[in-house]
Length: 105
Image (cartoon, rainbow, N blue to C red; front, top):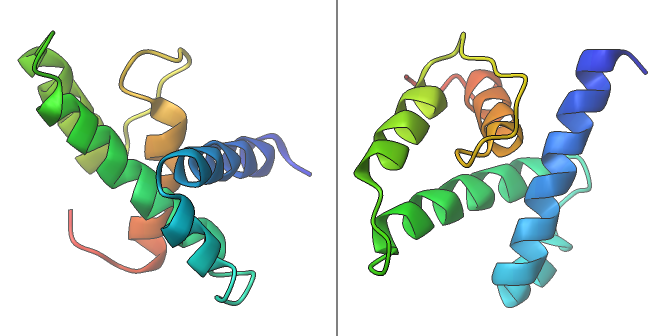
């Protein structure tokens, strides 16, 4: 497996874990989908979950983190070698899904 494919696979796995932990019933429902479609649902769920957490954090709101995260999410050329709070792995899988589905940026 090539390095980019392994990285993308790890990104989808991170999304699966987020989905399984935070959306258990919905996660179990994804098992009814064809196996090839499941990772894409996990990526979209994790994308929405991270956005929701950034917006709903009333104890320590961080508008800069939300702006950084949204720019990274929408920029198809954004890359990062670090695992900062914006969750680049999750974003990598969401960007992959957006490109595959030809969703606008």
